Length: 454
Image (cartoon, rainbow, N blue to C red; front, top):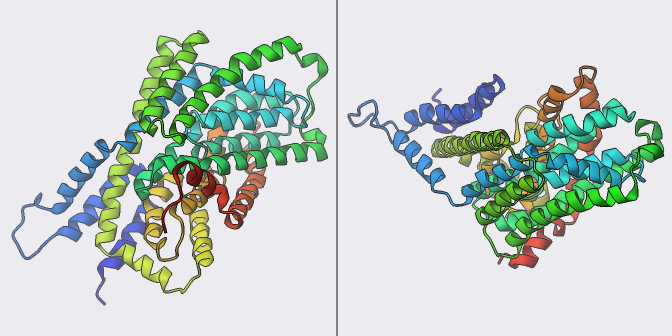
């Protein structure tokens, strides 16, 4: 029985997943898979070839140049630098304390403050690991000291930290814009309502749970609450300056006053100014921020080089056409296609992270959107919501491992996994709401940039 090229493409995809599960670096595994299978795909036995006379090498060089010259990706290092500066300048510490004072009368006030801090910090950085780790060191000990239940406190940090890949300016949305060839401006506008809706649903759950069972989130003692003058001072010096910075970045994008890269430059400069004003910017912290920015931006760029090479070979071998034929052959309705796509993305979130899912698997569905008459920005928001689950579903549940790395030794993984399960259900519920009311994702982009012509 002769093996066909599409079958080899599917084997290539399965081998990639296997290698990633073994722990190999994603970017370089993509490049290795693309080069090895691409060498086979482009090899021409009918003419004499030297070992390096193969189109796959030209493709790799071309993809590398395309990534380096992509204007949209310029925003990635600038937004990263903004986030790392805000993180290392102790601005988030001030923000959490201020929000905690503002929410002191609510049940589960510290949990609400932690979620609000995560949501606001998410607009300064799209890196989930940074948000979960920082809040795990900052908010988790405070909640545990206040008598919060271990599972309850752990779930709050993990779920809130994941908002960083959904709420703009999100690195994930920039990556999606490049992959799907969509406008990052419209994607940012589309993500605002779903992102803050999900954060609001988390807060409603927290308040409701703490109201029903106050023992899991005790209220602060009156003697621990500072005078009103100090509360006002904290709000004025922490929440308002950071809020102005965030609104100037997002507002300039939504109003068409700046591109994402230009707005990211403003945000990076604003983060530096805030760090100087708070007298928390040191040479060591600046060096750390620059180093981490370069490291993470390089990772993102190599992911693109590898993914574009891998995807080109996968498509050339006929893998993309084979998958498309299977799905269209099912004779699905539009709703059926959307449900099938989201179930597959959800299941892939168990063993894989958002980068592998977004870069390898999402492009398989993109050519089918026209066939099923699905708005690409609506589909993008469903994917963005769904990718929250890739951080919350065991066994990979990376947010749990990020938190475990900084949590006290008596906080076990089973406590964290148990704590994040309710938020997983909330994400699925939020997706169901957006299925019923797609205007949640489409209202702002249509309002700011006009409706997409049919």
